[in-house]
Length: 127
Image (cartoon, rainbow, N blue to C red; front, top):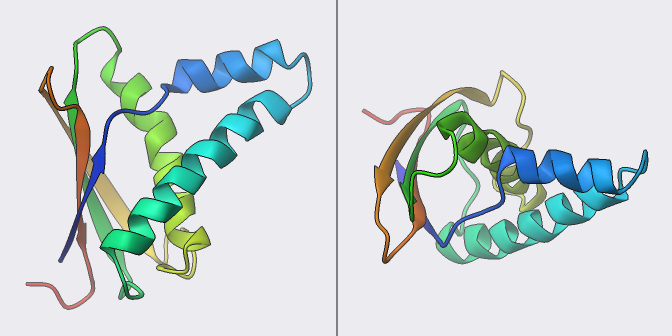
């Protein structure tokens, strides 16, 4: 089992969709956002996880939000995508297909003074 903490919060799925709309049929707006946020996660993953994961894995995401303004699926949808892609990009997981990630779960709490995402990764062989 591996635990990581990502400080702060990330754009929502609606923010990502809006970035694509503003780019007027050009994916550069959303892609620039995704690449920026994925780079941030790559740095965190490489500093907190210094080895390759043993697949298959499951991931438990625990979001500590600063408020309740965003819908739960809006919070988690974009983050799932960029985090799981960052696991692959950082070299910690070979692929993010069904063979390598067999599931994930989300839990949501409030922490107005310290928004963050706590991630627990369960690997093959964990009991």
